[in-house]
Length: 72
Image 1 (cartoon, rainbow, N blue to C red):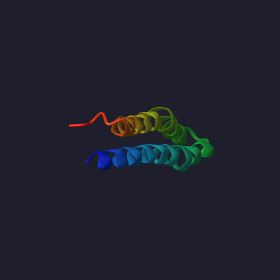
Image 2 (cartoon, rainbow, N blue to C red; image 1 turned 60 degrees about the vertical axis):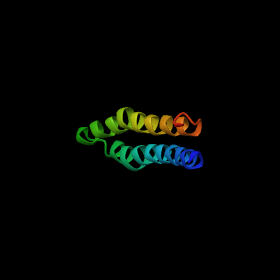
Image 3 (tube, helix red, strand yellow; image 1 turned 120 degrees about the vertical axis):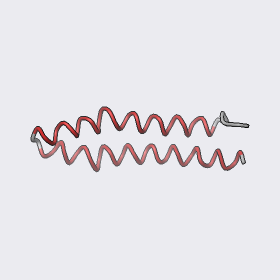
């Protein structure tokens, strides 16, 4: 069971990094390049609010799983 938790921790970290990539590269940068105000506000929200919260949460969860903090 500990092996599964550690494997899941690595998956959570990879998902956190993938979420950061998706939010910044696929969502925010195209909106930044449009340049109008209606696109700029969501781009700022994606970049400075959602990406750090989602990425940080998933990576911290994964690190705790790798360090075996969730041991029963």
